[in-house]
Length: 516
Image 1 (spheres, helix red, strand yellow):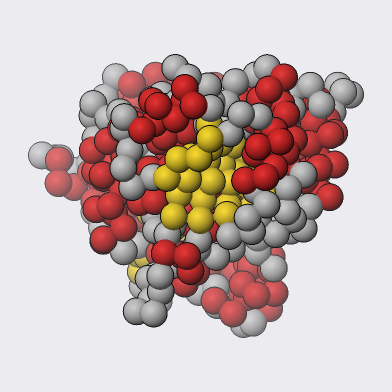
Image 2 (image 1 turned 180 degrees about the vertical axis):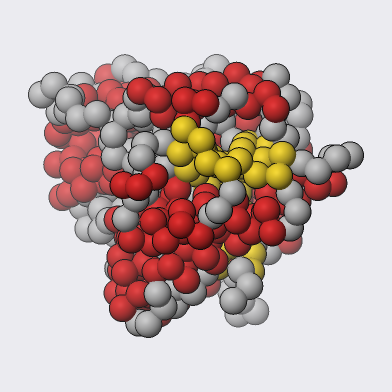
């Protein structure tokens, strides 16, 4: 069978290395020999390798294939044989004793009759391309010894202009977390099979993979339900079916009413950004509640957003007595004093049915008492979404976990950390960053793959909080709403590009929404 590339963002499932092993086993049990899968994987590597070296070479390219002691090395031997068959010069360098290989990898090594040398003899300077087939996504320990030294050598050579293609995962990247296992290959491109792994899209693994090539091999799609997968790429395939779309019979009240709790005077911009973007994603009404001084500032900037006076927690409780206000954003620009704490408590203790988005200062206010946050969230029947960045997340996590961190070789992945906080608080957690993770208490998680660096600007998070609330107000389920908002947020930023400020996002968001 000829391997066929897949446009990888269209596939939504992510497989951990353990789940990938189960998928391989299911394919073999269904009648596809393991060596046939290895042949297909090696053929895909050879195809990509040829595209990397043939267009730029004036003479026959020379390719080095670094082969490890397992099935990743077996893929490398297959690729070496097929590249040599195309007339390219290929030398394999083996980590460990080739004779010690077992199973499919041993068969692949026997089929390779070209030059094989020990890894200690590898010097990249005479090659046009290095194929890294040392270790795949399932690496479960830190690299050391000869393997680690080869990785360092390759990286120095690549930084001087060399080119590297990784098989399955750059050696040294943990396939489940994206973390480095001591040291890792810096690849120009990575070829992987059937489905991406979390390590392909979580930082720093995503950056080390280079251009990703996801290739289908003969693993049947019907193995996926049996794997009960819970981690997904964040994209329209995950949430588009739930995205609210205005109906002919709709009116502003049927499209939901978002309440944004403002900070005091001279601290109003964040709440205003949230309010504007809640309206942009389709909420029928948006109201900002704040002090008279705050409302005077808001009134100078907005017209489509309603304003209501709120002099403290009692006023806010009365405002929240209207059940039509079915989504609330609190935290952006709120402040950290007793008055802010009172407003936050009033929101958390209000009607159970409404959805809450807690961002920024709302998270910091609970940083020393995360157990109370968990208690209040779990006491509600309505949905709560927390949107911490790494600093806010660490404060909440540390407040819930006084014990020392685990001494395991690799720290928990970003996905696992977000899922842990979601389970402990009962809230959906959006752990922000260049690889934002949305985690639900039921174990589902999404990972964003295309958030531009331009989003690292003041007010960007306030925009995101408002977008989530606007989608929730229209009835979108929480996990899907948070995931959709992350994706839309990134696309809106990409449309602006360099020079982005948070003020640009509402207008850009309209263009993205029209595209959907």
